[in-house]
Length: 517
Image (cartoon, rainbow, N blue to C red; front, top):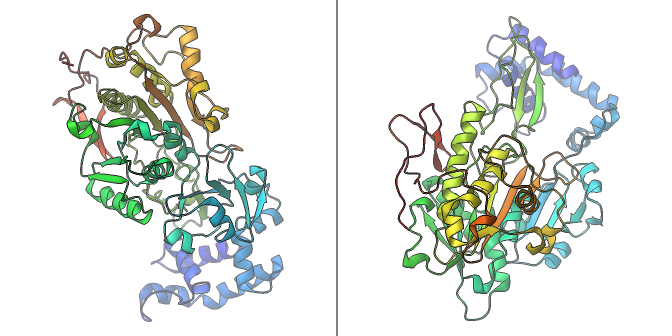
C-alpha cells in the first residue's frame, strides 16, 4: 500500500503519467532486470527515475515488514498469495490450471514420471484450489481421462512437454464435448464444426488415435471460417502431432457445407461448439483487478481490457467517483469466443437463432448419428432453450434425432451431478413434464467459481435412432418448415468471432421459404 501512495504522489508532480503508466513504470524501475525500457533521455523514464530513491525505500520497508530477506523471496510470496493470508484475507477458491495429457504423443504415466516428477498427488481437488499458487501438487480428474488439475499459477509454459505439444492447457469443461461425443472406429469421420483454436479438435484426434485399428482411416474434419484463426488451428494441430488425423478446412464455413455431399458421406459424428455470449469463461468477469490511484484533478477513467469483456446483467456505467481499476487477464490462450456488445436480450436472441440454425444444419448430414452441442454460456436461451427447439424441429422429427439420455452417456459424465436447468416463460410452447425432465437430466452444466474448479459451460448430445414417433416430441417452438435464409436488408448483422449473427430488431423474423429435403 505504501507504493500505492507513492505512485499517487508521483502523479501530483508529473503531468505525463496517468495511473496505469505510473504503476507499470514503477514496476519496471524497481523489479525488471533491464529497468525501464526507454532511452536514457526519454521523458517518461526521466519522470519516474527521479523518484527512484523514494520508491526503493518504500519497497524495502514493505519487504522487511513482511519478513523477507530478498526481493526474489518477496516476489515469490506475492505470486503464491502468501501476503493475502498474512493480511487476514480468507483465501478464495481459485480456478486451477487444468492440463490435458496429449495421448497422441505421450502417456499420463510418462508425464507423471517426467514433467510432474516431484509433484504430490492429492485425492481432493479442494487441496489444489486452496494450495499456494505454485505448489507442486496435482489432482487426477475422475471424470475425464488423462486430465490433471494443478495450482493456478504454476508455470509449465517453458517445460519440454508443453513446448512439444505433449501437454495442453484446456479447461475441464472444455473437454466434455469430445469425451461425450465418444467417437469410435465404426462412427466414421468426425466433424469439428467451429474448430479454432484447436483444443477440442486435438482432443477428438487423441480419442480417435487411441481407438484406431491398423489399416483404418478415420479422420477429424476441422472447419474454421476465419483466416487468422485457421492459422492458429493449423499450428496447434501440428504441434499436437494430430495432422495425420485432422484435415483442416481453413477459411471454410460449416454452414456452407452440403450435408449430402460425397465429401461428407462417411461423417458419423459432429462436434458443435458455436460462438456464444461467453458468459461462462473464467478470466473475463474474474480477471485480476488492480486498484489504481486517481490523478490529482479528477478520477482517472480506466477502460477495461478489450478481450471480449461483457457487461454483467444489470451492470451500470461506473460513477465518476468510482475507483479506477485495471483488469488483468492472466490466461494467454487464444479465446474461443468473442461476444457481441449490446443489449442482453437482443444478443441472446441473435446468438440462439444462429445456434439453432447450425445445430439443425448438422442434423441434415446423411450419415451423422451423433452430435454434441456446447457453449461456454450460462444462459438458458443459448443452452437448454436451443436443445428443446432443435428437438422440436421438423428435421429432428423426420430423421429421428433424440437427446442422449444420462444413462447412455460415457461413465465419467454420467457421474457428473450438475444437470440442465429450466426457466419459465422462455419458450413459446412448454413441453410436457416427463419429456422436459428427461431432457434436462440429459443436459450437462458446469458453473464457474465452484468447488469443481471449472468454467461455466453447457453440453448436450443428440443421437439418431431412425424416425421418431411425433407424439413423443413437443409441438414445434420454431416452425422449421420455414428456412432460416440469412439476413434481410432491415436486419442488423454484427460479426461475432467467426460467425455472423442477427442483432434482432423489431422486424427481425425468420424468412418464409419451404425447405426441400
